[in-house]
Structures are given as structure tokens and as C-alpha cells.
Image (cartoon, rainbow, N blue to C red):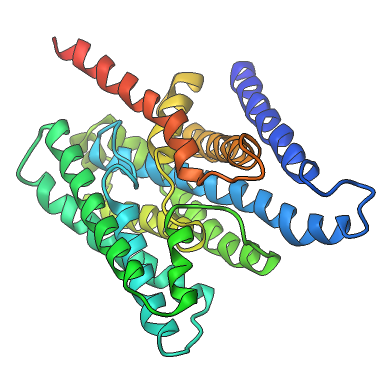
Length: 321
């Protein structure tokens, strides 16, 4: 118990330090007359976005890993973020092309539908193979197809505002306001509350399907609810920040290493805190490493997260040798 408390405190510290630096650091200093406006209107919403959406994405990845019993499963790797990205871009282009504004709830709904379609495609493929490598590669291909279609739509769009979707499609926490923060926080809380409400059936499911049935878990309903929660969380992230790579795969694995458990009552808060810290640090690096040029958040999370995925694959390969 003491070790768990210490681990949670470490994660909180890794949240607080980059959050404070993200709010303080920038071209405008404390003596700048517009500092307060920049702080409240730009830096604080961006910091909160990295915190909440990063945590939501990591929990989404954990739920997918439980569902597929696969440590490489994640919204980005399985192409789910790509599907959410494609559907959001399609809806935005259709609406903006006609001069119609679409609100945040509409964007999340579009992203959720795209995530659900991609998830169904992955589920269909998983029925015909038990090999992790085939499932992962299939998900990657689905993601590439969705990304290619999104880029095609954005490239040939005429409206200047639609072309600007290119920057959203690369992934970024910039451009947020407190209204956005309030909206995505509501969706994130719903998804997280649903995830935590499933902690007992998740714990039983991790023990084995037969055990889960023996303690009264309706596996069909459980799987539906698990996918709904995961899709809602990943769709919320994609709708507001675009597709963000590797967070949903790397963070749950690091949390398992840190807490030495897969139990949901520990893993869900650990993944949320870990995802928040991971994205806050990555966003800080994206902003400051080559300032004033800003990197896409996915470029940084890929640099940090891809080695973790490689490590997982190597470990599984050694166990099967």
C-alpha cells in the first residue's frame, strides 16, 4: 500500500512540474502587459487539455488491452484514432464547406462514430486470427488508410478554414479555450466514470472468461460497455486534439511496470495520471525544443512511446522462444 501511494505521488509530481512549466514558460514574461490574458486564454487551457486528454487516452488504451488481452492494443496502433480522425474531418468539411458551424458535441459524436467503425473492423479481423502481429499490422493498415483518406480530403478542400484542418490532423493541444476544456472534461468524466464502474467485471475478466461467467458477468454486455467507454475516451481526444500516437499503448505498460499489477482499481487512476504526465511532458517538449517552431504532439509522443512498444514486442518474443 505504501509503495502504491509513493508511486501515485511520483506521478502527481510528474504532472505538477511540467504543468507549472507549461504555464510559466513562453515568449511572454511576467512583466508583459498581456501576460494574464495569455496565461488564462492560451497556456492554462492548453495545459489542462494535455492533462485531461492525455489521461483519457491512456485509460482508453488500457481498456482496449483488457478487451483484446493484448499489451500492444491501443487507439492509435489499432487504427481507431485514424477512424475517429477521418470521420471528424469528413463532418467538418461537409459543414464548413456549407458555412455551417458544428459544435463540440457534434465533433465528439462524429469522432465516436469513426472510432466505432474502426473498432468493428478490428474486431472482425480478430475473429480470424489469434496472432498478435497480424492484428497489430491490420490495425496499422486501417490507420494508414484512414489517414490517407483524411489527407486526401483536406488537400483538395477549397475553403481556407478547411485546409487549416491539416494542422489539427497532425495532433496538437494548442488553440484550446476554457469552453473547450469544459466540454471535453464532461465527456472524459463520463468515459472515466463508466470505466471505473466496470472495475469489478474487468477484474473478473482478467482472471479468465470462465471465471468471469462463474461470478455472473454478462460477457457480451461487458464487452460492449468496455468498447463504448474506450471509444468515447479516444473519440473525445481525437475530436479536440487530433490523433495522438502511442500514449494509449506505452502508458498502460509503464503503469503495469510501476505498480506491478493489472488490477483495474489501481490501473485506471495510474493510467490517467501517467497519461497526463506523459502528454504534459511531451507537449512541453513540442513547444520548447525548437522554439519558436512547434512540433506536432504526435511526433514527440512517438519518440517517447515507440521504444516502449518495441520493448513489449521483444519481451513477448523472448517468452515465446
